[in-house]
Length: 249
Image 1 (tube, one colour):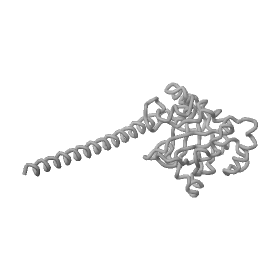
Image 2 (spheres, rainbow, N blue to C red):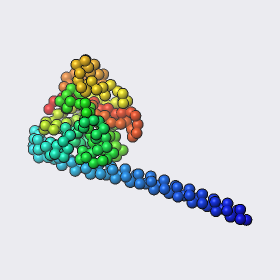
Image 3 (cartoon, one colour):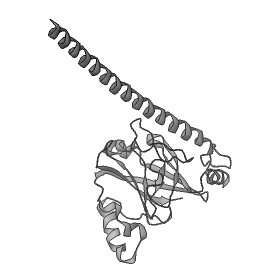
């Protein structure tokens, strides 16, 4: 009898321990989900607030016309000295400031305003020579809520790309650069698009770069190519690349 009682008590202890363990795991998972949600919300709020500083034609931030003044860029540089321009893709409602850090890890988990956040910032490759260079790469996270570069995958649909080819960069010096998106594709981290000598524009790479531009579909008469890069899936090794040709101001 006593043996059975001890056995039942032992089983009950194991059951209670198991329940406690499951509860702890559940609470930890809920805490993680809450933290992720809070991070998404904080990033959305920050970048929503920054829209008030979006470079705008006609002079004042947040308004529109065709000739840009330096009022908005100056305000953004005061917030972050690494500010290099503002990227807009109306087809997916994308509108973000762009920064360039000393290395490509600087803004992976740091927002434009300097906050620690998984959303990070939209950033130009540290090897890029600026938006006026023949070739540039700009990176952004593929966020699950569709923010940052989370909408780039829509351009993998040829019909969507054909209907929404417009991309605009407003530079830190106050000019507006117009691009036409001509290709979107899946790639790997060792894709030719990431070649450093293309970004550095070494003389030996010029011919190879021109051949690369034709392979990805740039055609003739482009002044420069801008590549946008994001992860193809959360935690995945693949990439989604968007290629756009600079067509003028």
